[in-house]
Amino acid sequence: MIIGALLDLGLSLDFLKEELMKLGLGKPEIQRRKIKQGDISCTRFYLKTAPFKKINLRTKKDIFSLLNRSGLNEPTKSLAKEIFLNLFKAESRVHRENIDRISLNELADIDSVVDIVSTAILFKELRVDKVYSSRVSLGRGFVKTREGTLPLPSPATLELLKDIPISIHDINHELVTPTGASILKTLSNDFGKSPEFTIKKIGYGAASTRREDNIPNMLRVILGETENKSLYDEVFVIEVNLDDTLPLNLEYVIEKLLKEGALDVFISPIIMKKSRPANLLSVIAEERLLERIINVIFDETTTFGVRYFKVKRKKLQKESMLVKTPLGKVSIKVGRLDGKIKIISPEYEDCKKLASNLNIPLRKIYEASKDAFKRGYSLRND
Image 1 (tube, rainbow, N blue to C red):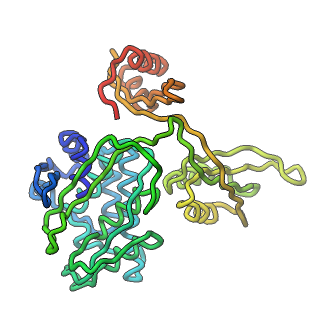
Image 2 (tube, rainbow, N blue to C red; image 1 turned 90 degrees about the vertical axis):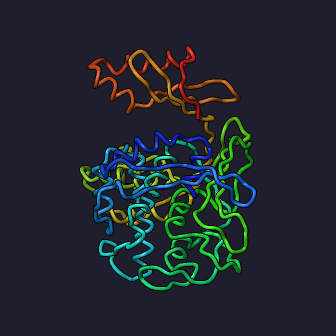
Image 3 (cartoon, rainbow, N blue to C red; image 1 turned 180 degrees about the horizontal axis):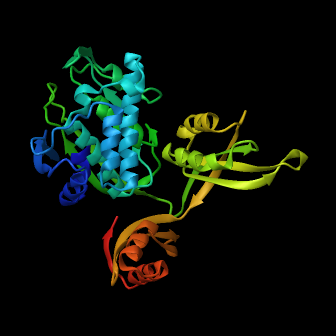
């Protein structure tokens, strides 16, 4: 349903096929079709698993190894891993087993793996700043699985939805699967509320089954822009003074904090009491990730405490697009304030790859990208 809704927004099925090829499991046979749920036209996503290589994808190690070997870009790999990690954590709590010994059974069938990876691919291609979800509606009853009959909502689904607003309805149907719950939990910045925004596109994704109560079994995704030309929000700054953590370890600490969702991490040299040289570790993160970030700091540094405080941010309105230069295609970000362009920033990785392939200075790629934008040579506007 999530993939169907994202494709219904206008994202490319051919692009998705090309990216799925990078898993190294063979050529995917995927389709999208328009079907009716109730009187609403929706997009249904179809996958044939037969063309894929038969491979064991049950444990976290199996799935993470597949993603690490793949040719997918790092942001997509990271998002897919986070979705899977939330699934494994929930199953680990339900079964009270070590996360590295958990086997996902049908949740790790190739179609579920493709569902999660496809969601990560399309979501990163959509290039949105934030995701807001409505209160999650759950059904009642029972569902048959390879592990036997389970109550609804399923135990894993409930674990994933802890601290998230839900409503349970007298509907004998599984409205949210563990995979769907993990995707919602990972992608969403908030539940039950959203800022004011202008609707730009609407996508409807259809499920494979029809509900007994005849309510359309679908997911709706709304793509919009905030009303403010400049975006305001609030984030937390977490700080800690480190005078006895090995400097060599700080690179690993930074990488782990970024993987956990930190918006930015930086280190500043400071002088502490008794004129001791030290490092100030600063992390910028959203409130929902505050405890996770603090736990990483306690796990990976020698500190006995951290301090954190809320700050306000004012951001430029960001727009991403692809430009065509004489040297190749480059993604760029454009920052605007009250409609006026303040900054044009080519993506470093795109420029680095072109500069390396063509053996020319990186600076020339940057200049060519900015010039292409100014001349109006954009290929895609997200």
